[in-house]
Length: 185
Image (cartoon, rainbow, N blue to C red; front, side, top):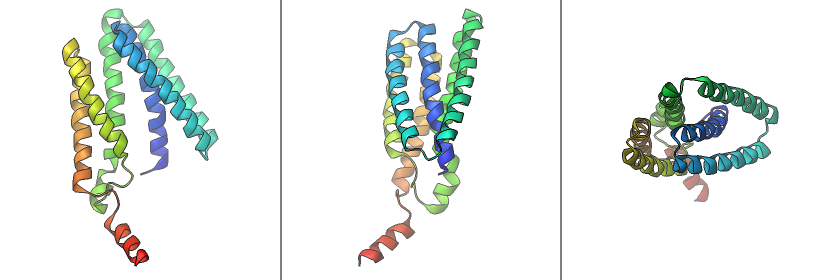
């Protein structure tokens, strides 16, 4: 997997949290606000740790600035948009970000199938994402919120498909596993 692609995901996650927090305020839903406030705090800590270990600190600042400007523009739009339209439009923007973020490991599907390995795919994130999207799907059904339902049906299917790849393919390519076995003998 390309590290610069994973770096982009770091900033999308943080700004998605900000947009979801804004969406929670628009919905006046305390649960969405609390969960996304906590998620935003965790994501900020994650970016700080990512920055600490990054070899390209200037690039990190550049990406944070670009993502911050983009996020500010979307929030500015949400502030100026007609209150009757903003829920649906901001929900669509958040849905697009979510689909991009969750499906990003599948951008390397050709490589995964060719090498018959899920090496580089973030199993803990995909596994927890599957559980979380299912829980948000149930919450969306309870609220009868079409964006939460749509987002999380598609997200759950994407996560479940990615989990299925771990069942079909090992996390290490066969060549590497064989090479390690020969070295130990």
